[in-house]
View 1 (cartoon, chains in turn cyan, green):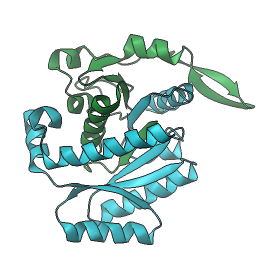
View 2 (view 1 turned 60 degrees about the vertical axis):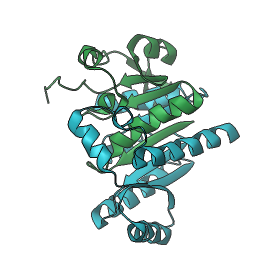
View 3 (view 1 turned 180 degrees about the horizontal axis):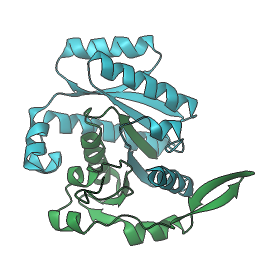
View 4 (view 1 turned 180 degrees about the vertical axis):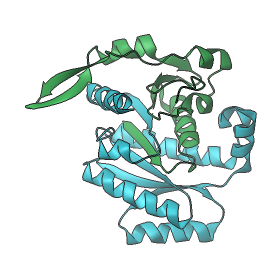
Length: 147
Length: 110
């Protein structure tokens, strides 16, 4: 899929001076980093689940994002079940000098939305994970205002 | 503000991208959501209805051209971004426009 990498990269560069909000969902493999596909973003969020392999992957992706010169690279912990897990994730990334942007809780409502094949927002707008992502959105809007 | 969402398969990356895009759309107006995953599912998480989902078509070849930037040859969009977005972007709920870069879900060739 080399052409999709080139297209995303070209699009982001073409939008470089555009002030609008853009969210890019990347492929799971680190190719979007090794091929500089997403080098022209202001904020790279790396989603990590609270288990070692996922944390390790997120650490590697974060390091690659920083090498690309992305101004802010931060981890978004996901499917976090309790305060102990959140603390463990926090300690891991602190040790690796990587910002933990937020921790989104584990939420059965998301799996239920998945089973129904609909958007989480259309399934249950008051689900805890949706509320948590809402807080992330508010912070991004705030960053955008200050930029 | 441009935000990329990365992560291991199964981490919930697409669910977060789609939900984040819509909540940003609610809070701050138009948002462009780009699905750069060759196994694309963002459209579902954005809440695109099935009819429009099935009507999604891949971006045509020839949208990119070689260009020399700072002495370095790279692929660039051969048409203005605004034109590409208005022609190929799909309107989703909450002020979100989706640009699907990979093949649409269900195209099933790979």
